[in-house]
Length: 329
Image (tube, rainbow, N blue to C red):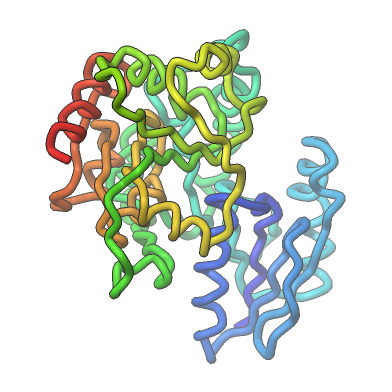
């Protein structure tokens, strides 16, 4: 069987990690042939996995619409797939070819609604793009999601038949295994995330700045993987005030991420996630975790013992979790 895989959205971060995990599965599959369509990531063709790049799709949203609704027809005529697998939340116009979709964007399903003035991008996802997602998912043969709670949300809120939704739980990269590596005493807090509003940097910074701190005792810095200019204005102001040390590490390689985890307390205050990949990675490395008390985090961490939960929208709750960890440590 020849499978046309569409993932022009993947470029870096979580989407790139998911792509890598699918590619690993494709390479192990001796019974099928894969044609993987990407935007800018470049891979070498393999025996049963070939790659097609369409970098122009990143130029604008109109280019993306043209790709999803028009250009895909050219790809289908060229490669004549038996099935289409879209890894980017919505179906493409594949004619009569059976199609499956990997769905991972929780924004359109979230109870927390964003205003147009608060974030044009998030408003667009919730009020326009989300409707396109919903309409397209109703016409596909199968939907794959990362967690039970997402399956339930799709069934309850979008009235999609539960029997056509399969849960495929993500696994951390095998490199994120505790193994015999050092278990260092943490010397920083670590929050790997982009600067989106729902990642909740501002509330975290307010909580850290409100902590009582003994004079002469060194504060554990907060290490971020986003750039300062990616943060919302309120979070940038708090950084500028300098009441708590913040380090902008930028995007890290896998090896640097593992090293950073090994010396950190993972703090994860995001209030909107599908799974929260850093939670899986820190859990695999057996690191201490401070996490938002949300359904995604509870399901991802399960019975993991070294975790403290907090209300991500409440400054004192975050501060109490941090203080509890520091007293314990």
